[in-house]
Length: 254
Image (cartoon, one colour):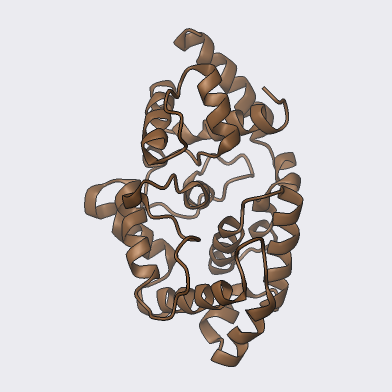
């Protein structure tokens, strides 16, 4: 497909799926129930963290996790005691278990109290090399600076080649500001032009069929390749095409 035709095709799909109606079947509905910035950030990060598997299960479990935090996730994190966090020990989503959940709460507390919050951490990392990769690397370092973690598989390490789908999705939610009612656009220290595609099996398969991804593995090199192709279509907002690729894969079985 020629570049002009590809852009026209994908723009049509972006317009179709980048709408508030999309929220009702997407994990972004979990942070969408909040108005306070800090609540949105914590709820969004946790919902993104468990975003693998069936979407109904993701949404159900993310809402359950937020309810375990008394539906005030930011206050629960910053004011929570050890005994409060132990209440999360019964939470399970696939391989993300109660031990993981407690560590995540402790790490988020450290980030909020000692590093200025999630926005500050990601934006500080971004400024190191003016890239999302440097933002993700710095976040990974800060997240695991407190002792006690049992597993690191739930926070992507791009230095080891991870695609970081869930973190890139979280960053899309926080940074894109197109006033369409889906993404939040709360952070302004990282430009939308720098965002990387949240690459998963659906977006990857569609991208390969469209000829904008040649790599067979869904790893960081694949993220760089496909996002580079999408930047040719819209340098200012390449990951808006996430809506198109995901919609084509999940809803249209492209």
